[in-house]
Image 1 (cartoon, rainbow, N blue to C red):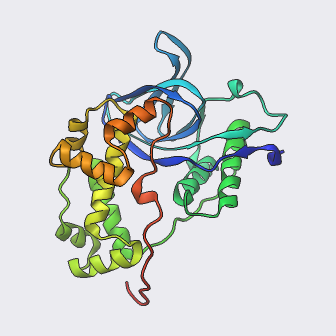
Image 2 (cartoon, rainbow, N blue to C red):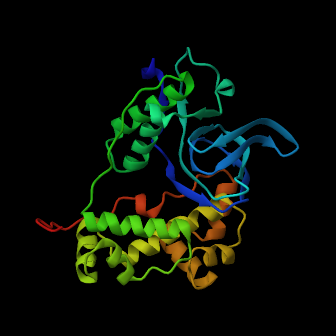
Image 3 (cartoon, rainbow, N blue to C red):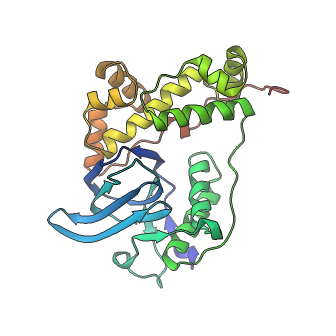
Amino acid sequence: MLSDLELSLPTTWGVATYPAGATYGPRILRDFEFVWIIEGSAQYCRGEMHYLEDVAQAQAGSILLCRPGIDFFLWDQTRRTRHAYFHFTVSSLPSDWPPVAQWPLLARTLPDEGDILLPLFRHLLTWAGRGDVRQCRLTMAALLSAFLTGETATGDVPRESLPPPVERALAYIHARLEEQPDAPLALADIADAACVTREHLCRLFTDATGRSPAETVRLARLDQAAVLPARSNYSVAETAAMCGFPNAFHFSRRFKDAFGMSPRALRQSVQSGETPPTPRLLRSAPARRASPGKE
């Protein structure tokens, strides 16, 4: 019975993008992690380099369940890889479930047939940290149960809506940074993509998100950058250049302001088994001002 299943709320979550041929790990994973391969592919390995316990080949659309222990990823050699992830802990399990060591590593979803795993995963990414706590726990329980049993169903969950110009601006910002993380993003270009004036876009952003477009771009860059110390072997200087910061000093200062630790400290904490920080743009935004009638 699912009443016997006790899971924590997601401890960290987000979406990461890796260039072709990148690697992540080995790491010591102290909790559980669901990983959804959105684009590209990955070879997921459990165990020491010289003694592999399990190996899974994950194509786009696959979902991995990473269990506590030593593991590492080899990302697609020919194209970039994007994946979503969230961490959680398990306090108790139903007595009739198989032992954790026997849990599957991989599920290949069937989005065209309405596989329930992807809608549940999207729902968690949308509401983690700001949605109803009981609903989040029920979603996680359903996702884990469906993953282990292979039972799926149809359905989807729409994400929270924002004013259309803000939606267009955010889509443009994320698309540009995913394609070219160090791409320059001028306010005029963002406003053109949103089909409004710069002044109106700034007002809409402040009212809808509590942040300016410039701050949103900076946090989007930092969110991308935070993945690299935590989930790659790039140096601080390489990470700063890849994510569009003028130098390592400026990047490190901004990084510490955003996440409360330096990039090196973050890498050390993750290597010791701590979970990476929650992306800044997924955290609760500052209080919004009332803006009736604005579009």
